[in-house]
Image (cartoon, rainbow, N blue to C red):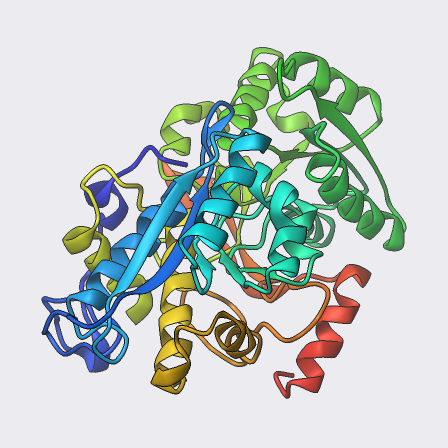
Length: 417
């Protein structure tokens, strides 16, 4: 999800700003146009960047937004000192990163986090230290089923459900095989709910799991086919999902199955990588607004990245999520009493009180709440690869699953439904 840059991302987008007016500058925080000069507020972020992947887009975008905020008055005159650590997908380094930011630096919150490893290793640490993590690139159960982490991205479980639901309702799917990574808190956890959805609707489902250290996509594809499936759900990073589709192409399987995927395959480089063979035959769920949806936040995200990020920083879904997490954090901090901004406990309580924040990048309202679990983003779009791009084939829709019953109950209590 790191293959396209600003020009590719923005192709065909008209930069029309708020109230229909063209704007030259991004809108950030207090938007004073003057640099913040007070005592810094320390905020941390942790990403994973090593084999098997690079999740740094989320912290890249959060940093860009914070830099923009610092150039526009900061938080009531105080700049954000954003410190980022890379856990390199190593559990020991993940623990060290959290200790460095939370204990040594005294960060009041973590924003933009994205890593399989650090969330699994540090979720209890965040509870023990009473620090909230406004994450952006979550892909494991601990990120959504522990009390001190909340993300703007959906992760694989909801996005799989969105893809599966569409396939059952619109493509005639009756038996879905979910190909995922054999990481207990990732592949089995997220495939299971899509299987449950199919079974609840009178269908069937199964999973074929890849060894993350040595993934054999051909064997997984054969296992999925042998299950009797009529639909293949590629619950994988984009590179591995492309490999599955290439293996299927070698066997000329395009028309024999429905081919569906969660958000990781929503990458503007994917249609060209797949080629004409797959045109019109691959359906991809999008957890945030597709890039053709040109709302004010979508435009502002690009402007922030163009002015404050590095040219080679991705403009992708994880980056959108990092931008959103950072904007929501700044919005809540600006609502706080300035005297409380160095008090981690008060900042944590303030984050928990977030309710009803909205953005054109996200289908539903963002909220946190004081719960043992958090998954505010569980509605999205469905797209199809067509003519070298992605066509929106279903606008914002709620995912239907018993898994979301406790989340919906909280939303009702907060008056968001």
